[in-house]
Length: 365
Image 1 (cartoon, rainbow, N blue to C red):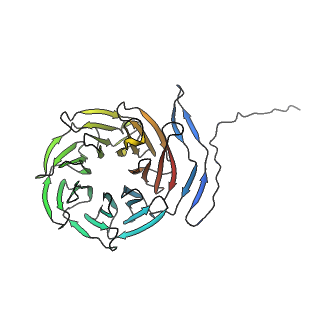
Image 2 (image 1 turned 60 degrees about the vertical axis):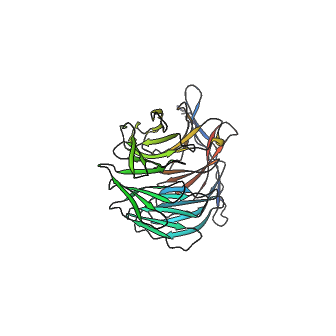
Image 3 (image 1 turned 60 degrees about the horizontal axis):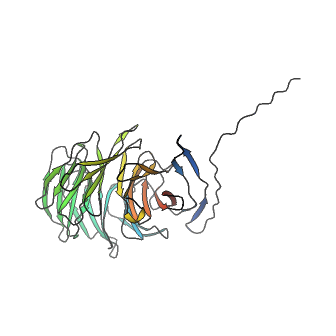
């Protein structure tokens, strides 16, 4: 008889050791790392967590947006039509607020206070006070379509809102009255951001442009060169000298973030390419986080990337597998990020310097 022995070469596999101990709301999981190497030896993509903490979910459906209220609390909203304030350090819900009739689209916080604003597909904007009742402190009604942009002035006296109705509205926060209205044809607003210490408001649009508005009369002060794809989000550096926008796209076409000069030249400075689907969010990271200026992006490709702001080099990529499209990104503190997702709620990410600049998923809720 002829015996044949078939030997199969063992393929590298992701090794995972999980320990789940239910203690109230908390589950801990211990995972090992997996790496993907480039031919030059650089670790291009790394997926790792140490002690991962899974808390009770803040929402029962897709989370559309998350924002940091202070160094302990975040505010989020999504398809469950609920605004949730959450202590991301302890994993506890502080307050659930109901008032909107449809999905929450945007959140804007008055930092170092308990006040914040929420916008919704119900065309309404509501102002909330964490120290007050569970009813909105103020309501702002003036748009004819979904509200897709919120920005609070540096002195917190004014609120700018934008919508798919091509309109920007400027509100008096104290009275709830609309002070200014401006409309530009085909200007379907995707995001608004107020420039620190300035009367200017940055706005991205589905018409592929980025506009700079002067709040004194609500006039367009500058239009940046049009991009090839829809501009989905924008952020302004803390010093107000630079801004960043990001693009829709698919298969690597588009899918980039762009750094712009907000001062005299207002030119494009750098582009950050490496995502393969729409980049939904982009943020400047605190200078204390790294020795160099860095930015972060999150994308529908389930990845969060950290970039060297000056060179455009990708410093680290974290894959949040199973999360679905990543919808929102916010800076929580000097070493932590909050990332909202389509399928897995909000993920708490932390920068680790023990082996260079790395990003780890440390908790979920």
